[in-house]
Length: 339
Image (cartoon, rainbow, N blue to C red):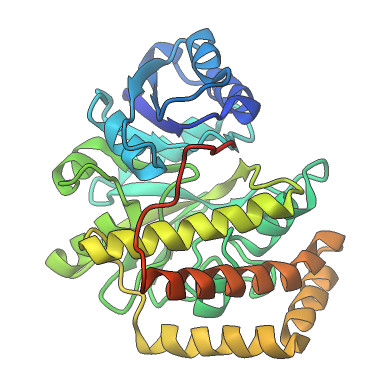
């Protein structure tokens, strides 16, 4: 018997992408009466609320506006046994996705959640979205740190973090300890609702930090990587949006790190070496071109050559964000935010 699922979707002026997301959820071969969709809205002025109502969503307020605060606001209203963290710019790639994510969790009661092991590549998507699907991440810095959590066609791996892994055919059962943790969370990650509620103490739900804190207390955590994907229409072909999202990412991270909200350990020996390699690669450019060519040889797509610009933009935005945080630390302004 299928369990009830709460889908948590934070929104802020997401009208341009939300309908495709909700349509894919309502098209699942899963009892719709067992799927509650909770949209936590940060004060949208576009058609977001109208679209949410069209697909019979429960709409709650998110006065703090950020995605992490929206997830927590939605979690507070969740009644399902499982919670699926699905962003407004996600699309479930097929009608069996929900069942594929839930079924392994019913067989392995000692794991806390499940996650797709790749982003779904589609020819019709914009070049930035295709690039992110090919490299398996939205932040190219993670390629150098090795802590990505989706299939990277350059390395041929879904993560480079040390872990235990058991192949069950359609999915992997993995276990991470204090040696490190990939950037698990969001974009289709499913958690046991009880796990999230027991381990979320603030007004923000930082999924990767919840897992990091859990490992610190319990030595390890088990997760399931399902051999399917999820579509993430990340920026499509808008380079300006990519830069803004990187700016928002670093600004928010440094703000919450200062407040003590973030527990994921970025300052490791391996990460320091990876960061240095990232900076040197951006300065010399040649390694970035090599990555692009290597990726293209594995799956021909001109989107690979955005890698050079993606890394350069990331270095600039992260460097500027780090320097500016020495003077003023605050969350990124959402007043003019558009999806």
